[in-house]
Image (tube, rainbow, N blue to C red; front, side, top):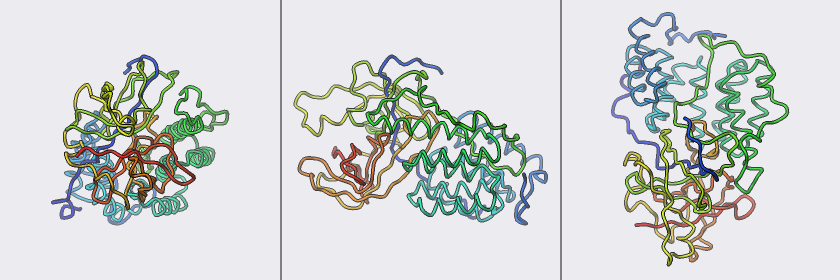
Length: 413
């Protein structure tokens, strides 16, 4: 029971990033159990009223209401150390954008349930989202060694690999597990995402046909299906989220952006969506989808300002997701920074942005551009980069040199 650890947590919505996809033609809208820890309560021992609460929470998740689900999971967990409730709350807090709350309880849950592969996988995944990738990968590998038949640690590592510019390693990791244990839906979904990202990155120019990403050797298509989930078997479910309205054959480009103007607008790189025939859609970190319109730029706009695109949304996101007024850094800002990005922005999967620590050099600050000491993927173009005070410095641009990226400055104080 964790009642005393739950109250008065510092809660915050996941910051102001958004994925965006622009179609180059009109979009078509369419929608084996492990030994129980002495502290844990087996599923068969959960009282009916608590079981009902957990099921209600799962139904709320399925309806796309993670905040309501998290509260129900929390209520159930207050009556005992029920693994399903506590692990469910961590995941629901993540999907609801309550990232600090999820961080605060994830290590507690993992410590209370060392027998839970899913609890350990979630902790490792959260460590990576915070920028501690090496620590996360070590934890996930150790979990895979101790529980080789569990899917969640493999899925968590695969998702980390995809978002950290290693989609091929993610594919190979999943293929080894599927070959040994059988096709598993969560892993096969992530494999498809990894293949999509790999093809998108290989294209370089930012265009790829989704239907063209099928590879010749895919054990998910030939392996025997993994047995249905049983008590104690971990999974890596996907959040309920809105889907981008694209057809499988549509060539698309994708990137990142920042929500501004109290949720009414998004800024991104103009090169991502500067096409008169583009149908533009934006999805935020909570999985909410909006259609967007590209605003005209002024005839007298500076060269740097002309690289930034402003998108007006069909209906606003919640104002608490927006970059606050005065939230941009001074024009000469440099030094410690962090990028916040959806590396697999092209994918329709639900996903959470990842933090990458960086350092900004003001070698070209007079021209409105910076270098940052981290490599960038094609899918990360437009990712916001913040200074150590959380102020927006600019948007990630093209790769400037080996191991470095470029940053287009943004300042609207």
